[in-house]
Length: 301
Image (cartoon, rainbow, N blue to C red; front, side):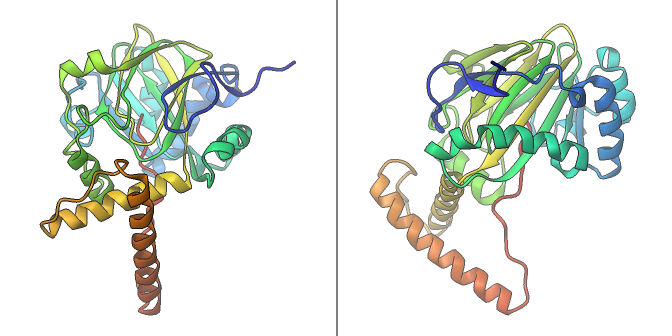
């Protein structure tokens, strides 16, 4: 029997639990370095490449790392010489490329039945490919999407934290992230390592990280290729709505109940906020104005 494209390795899929995974993508022709060099050239022309040098650390500002620690080589040059490039590179939203859109659909269609059984409403599906030089680091940060992260080449250590661990990311940090797309409240502390679940990834291994699970990545002593497949669900969109609502209540001088403390209160608040958002969107359309989409992809694992 052929191996499944992606399988959970430590129990049934749970959308809000960090889990180990395995996969069968290591030999996929689109994930070979020569294919990624061509993809990088195409995506750079569309400004869908993010990169920084290997001077970035766990505590570097994730948002500012490309400016603080620039990699001045082109995507094509960096990817072709990744072993000596001393760089980290992310190929963003690869589903924007017609060739790679088929790969994203293939993988997420394969996991969709497992996901939908526990976490319905898969949408805003995306793909991200990370190519790293030896020793390069992905700074500590959080992302909006649920994320299957799969190792294709090389080895890396991925530190992950429970998305509900308020020692690592406080409630206010979550509110800022969802309301303003700001990671100012997501601040690295070396003491966090003791609270992490650690994945030592090698080809064929991977992990699942829920929405806003903090993470930080340290590459091994050889070049690495990693691919992430991400998506939103009804639950992630509802959670974002709740945090945005709490942020607005806090600006009014109130002290809202933390998200998740009372499921019944969250359901009532989500219904109220959802109705308000729908009415506001209808009004904006009537006035000929744009409508904010809370499903834009931001993942940078």
